[in-house]
Image (cartoon, rainbow over all chains, first blue to last red; front, side):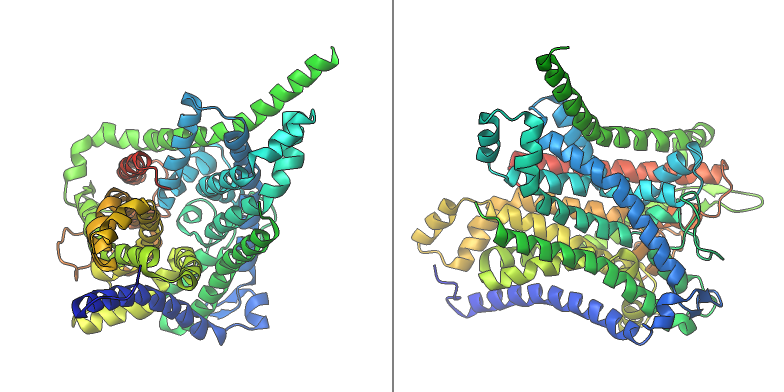
Length: 286
Length: 294
């Protein structure tokens, strides 16, 4: 079927739709270019390795980067094993039934809960009820709740993409169910599971609302010493620099610098995921 | 214990381990409802549900503290409505273009672009809004300040667009080829087929996509908090400053005394948000499931 428009009015509609679509591309490129151009001048060894001075107007963001690193690490530690194991259950063990339907309903619901509401939940459960206080531990657990659905859904999809015959061949040779999963399913599903999980983890690194109430502090004199300490974090730091300083204009370079580092971190996760995906898509074909 | 029964028990233990990991997600959802309910109950017991419809939000005051959420709810609704108005045409038309009209090479470009847009942290979008969009809105509409509902809606539209595109595109691609072939065979052009056959057939999926996009918009916090100006007044004008429910929770939770009326009131806002997004999601999921999309 020819793609070409038939007459003038069709041509107008066609190019109208094309320009609306490409307007979005333009906006995305513009936003990223704005942050890159605005922040590149601030990026320096000093900016990346020193502590903030004069309430963030000068100095660097080293403790902020460290804080985000700890939060991401904590989030991975909670969400990755739990999410992957949950996906293995749903893909390999679960039968159609009430329990499975309920689990799926819970995953969809959890994915739809606004991040600030999860922040309230983390405050109520982890910070106050369990007594963790505002801390890396409470923040990581809240972020883990947020990205758990992403990890489960992506991992299940990757597991289901492994052909049934791989499992049948192993079972036919007398391997147990677990041996089959471990040796004949997981190795082929792990790249896909990682891709989805990395996208989720990138989201966690950029989220502000959940850690606002559970983990983040604007300024700390020392780096966090334990999981029960508060930490600084890139998104929260940017928020404060951009809205709470007395002289916001003066802190512009620091704001752009922080925004750029945050974008690099988050899009870096995305890019890694995309590279892994395309690499393994070429490697495994069945 | 015989070898066989040992194997049997081992298999059961492994199975239960994985099952309990999966069940954790149910546990988390139950705990979210439980803890939000627990922390908002004292407020509802003291003030009753009628406080939801009081227009004055004045949580910090010496004589007369008031926790009316009407202004906050209307703020959220105004911003959401405007964002939807902007996001739907852009999102749906792009989805149609990408699914039906784009070349394979273009499609390869679009997937990462949409992922990138979805990946930009909301605080960065808020910052961009503050530095670039707000001055622009101020200039174009000759306002004293660019921090208003419209600026917030523009940013929120950007956040809803990836959701709308991704799910609408799935819905459009799920339309059976035979529908289109029937249309072509009757002499309809590509464009006629798209608008008269394919899009109507995918409409329920597109509606679900829009609802999920709205769900994201209602719950968005950082960008709106940074650019809407945060005045807790009831307004129907896009160029007025508004304050949303999410921004109220995020901005005030850090400063309230634990256990105060104000503290519990913020949890009530949280539970209202939770119920709104929950309802939107359930309806959207039902539609998607019915038409086997996604």
